[in-house]
Image 1: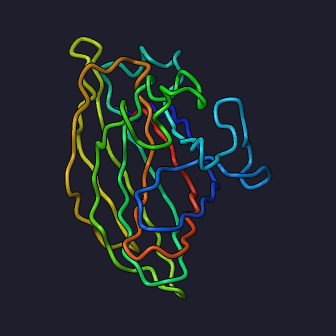
Image 2: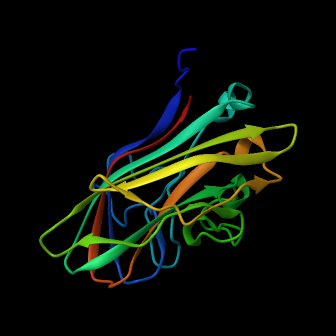
Length: 207
């Protein structure tokens, strides 16, 4: 049977990350950095109010996703000013983590707090130096059922410059609804420094 692709996501998005803490994909700190930002859903990022950026299916797509497999893809080039490992993870972000707005105490998306589940854990992998960047591709497949209310993990693969990166762990999400099929990546750099994540594509698509 042919694929029934319906994809939603973003392209050509750049984020600068400093330090060694796990950092989710965040809205830019100023206008003019990424096309389409800021927006009502994704205002400018600040240290006081970190604004996470996710991709997901719109509400009117819910019934066409229910019981059907779909895939999340992240493709990026990562460069830095020091030699470091990079760990790339993927989180599910339930609607409760962002629906109250970024200035609410209930907003947890920007810190990967309550309502955010690490569904695919990668492995810290070397390759970045001050003169060498890496290409990263993460893809993960899931299926959601409104009957069981479970977002079930299916499979995942990650590549760094064409070399397979081991998947460290995976997880399902229980108690999920059709409004919870949202995803956000995170990046961790072992040696800190200043690193630039240039996302070519980050999207979710029905298979």
